[in-house]
Length: 108
Image (cartoon, rainbow, N blue to C red):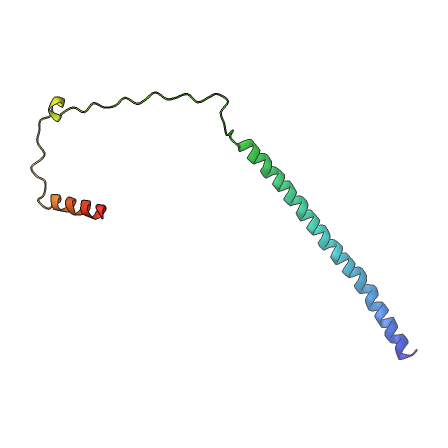
């Protein structure tokens, strides 16, 4: 046999093994992609069902009624409440100055 015929036969043997193997690999990859797409669609459908089940209506079937106004507290002098005790005398001397500084810092 000539070198050319030997080379042609060697190429045919390599291709006869390579082509079916490559075809099987590609078909398996495509099948895996299709399975992933089906799985994704199933998960999306489950999510849509869950969202639809958990969805709250935007509007209520009955009209909203006005709530009654809250009763206002009457401004009574402290003596009317019966408590005539003055402020405690044990307030530290530094507290009024600190409160004034905090008030000035908040106003700035």
